[in-house]
Length: 376
Length: 264
Image (cartoon, rainbow over the protein chains, first blue to last red):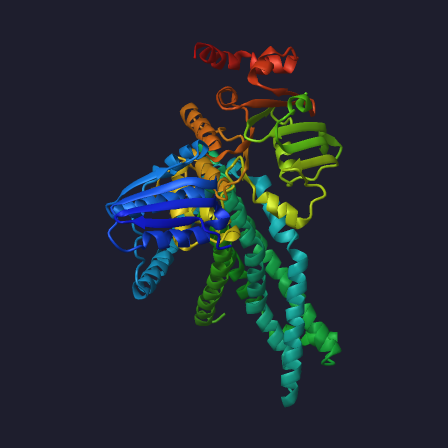
């Protein structure tokens, strides 16, 4: 390993360096060390000759290290000459010689500045993504207006395709999950209400909770994870492959062609899914009440009729299209924000899901306040 | 005919009876090809003829149905994983679209193979990234850029620099000059020729560019009808009476390059 690749003999002010062996990538580490030893020699040297005749093999790594050696001595004001270089290697050494030294690496900002900068950056990002959200919402409204004037422009096929993806294909998993959630709530209710002998109020709780809040929330979270992420990834990769630019140059409005059908599909699909999801949850709750709590189905239905009014159902369903709009717009904004790299596609897809779930829950909070104050 | 020319020369890539297909579609049907040490081989053929398929088969990205592929005398079809890895470090590949890692900067792209395979100090690593970049004709201003921020020609150059990162003995180039303007393509050809001379490379170049074939290629192999139908120098190609070769090398598009060549 520690084969001698460079040996120096000093004669007064003159330093003779004899190179030998293979100056290749594999030996780079030891060669570098030996060069550091050679250049680190003290004493006054004003002439250096490097004899390369003994070098058997030379690659870019070796050639660069030779160049570094020459530069180190030149910087000290020594007259440096390289001799005995095989003709085959001469062009490589010349090539490397032409490399300009890299300017000293910029010092990175300090930890505190970096932390402050990243906080500032995230605040700015929130601002810009809010602006992008409002911007796209406006663009969608304009596109919708244009389509309303000329209904034939609307991409009906695309809408049906998206509805199929969002609604029909999503139905089984959404039914399953809402059914299970209904079961779990009922089970928990029976278990705890039973301690007060208030088993029958489980029906009230399941009915109100599912219809007002849980049905629509679970569906929206599922849709954000299932369809919102798909929208972002689709639009993002279309952006990366310049497909969106292509559409634009052909005179199409990407908002009208790509985004509008997707968002409209969500606005139609999510309320329908919410309805089916709520029914599945009530069904699951009823089943558990019967099998686990001993509440007969006809008693459950009777109690449900008394406990819930149409208002509860309306509250849930009214929220659905607004939440769908948020999911759709966030997914599109993030999709269009994708830049060239694969990493950015992943990043925006994650952001799309996280943001839309967050905003759906925030919106739900506002709706709760609103409905409470109008007494619904 | 390739065999006859091989006398006394060192064969670094030896392709014998290779069959590659997808489903019912046979792309390469018992293909033979030799690549000699230190030459620039231009590999031509019609679009969709399977040039890239052969290249990808040699570098092991596509499975073959029959035949053997020897690189540096090692039969890659029978080589152990360790032998394969050793060979893979001795070749570099320039993919058609560059295939730079999009989440790494140019500097990181260049340093990635060196960092993985060699024991090199951080200082040398940085200096080498600069040196390699300058060797392919770029300056240090692109070091911190991401691949998405580079132009087509710059991407090709960075990708070439990455292919050369480990000082390979063989470089595979998949249409290196496609998508470059004639000046850029000429520069790139010259760059390949210079690097080939300085580093003693063997170059396997899939190309469509007749100018490249004229100016830098030592030998040309032609793929048509699922086989290598000819391999030899430009003069052999021009003299051939095979109809495909005639239309390719003596067709309309080739006249201009033929004329400039006659003048020089």
